[in-house]
Picture 1 (cartoon, rainbow, N blue to C red):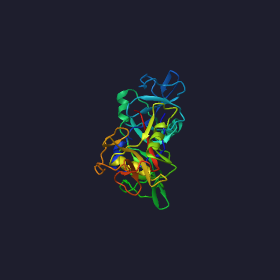
Picture 2 (picture 1 turned 90 degrees about the vertical axis):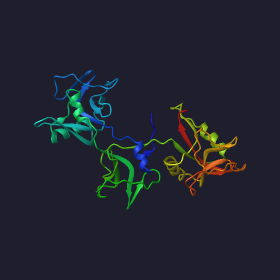
Picture 3 (picture 1 turned 180 degrees about the vertical axis):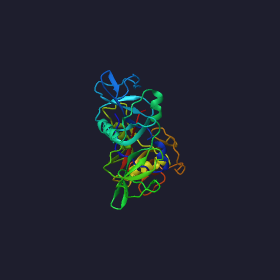
Picture 4 (picture 1 turned 60 degrees about the vertical axis):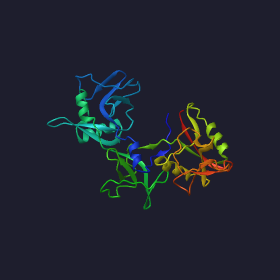
Length: 316
């Protein structure tokens, strides 16, 4: 099981390269019960490219997944994009980037084209299931005359050229060009979430107490997940973590940076990339902090001071 904390916030251009939003699922004209599955209008083929262990006994409708080109069963009340079939001089498939139940999707296709798409073989399917452009929700919204992010503080924008700024009060990201556009907040669309492994602990402890606190955190349903005081590398990672620091109740927060045996070390063994740390700090300045007011680097403090701190989770 995965846990998410909010819709995604983008902090800089590099964040766009860390996400893959081009995959999609789309309803097709395939229904069934148990082992008896049939295409809506193809009676002479038994070709169904099922995914591993598919379908399940409770499934009644099916969708195709872009990245694997295989078919999965699902509840007909689930919400997916869909493919319509258009009948004319040649058979044509139309990708509809709207989220609907299977019945809603079929009704749309019948009203606008012919029916949900049915594929006779892999070549037929491959003509339809290609890279498509569609919109997904991200965490930006309009608050009065101001655009805000639902989680964290960011000034990043990359608006779609010609966006009128009047289509709605919420923001989407396009799957191919990864450009932002305004949209009606009530539209049903897929969405991009933050999977956040960083926790701000709003308790004031010494550095040693903070270290013990992080390492004592347990997650019963994820026994292999462990916590430690955070390590922070310069660049995008630093920018992301600083957006967590502002949530603390103290102006400074402890990190996992510690001077030991003549060297600055992160407690998790990560490399230390800050060149401005003192080579031989005094006994009172041997633990690392992040400050709300002194951004851009880490600073050193007396390990016995009491501050909030940042824990992070991982598998190691």
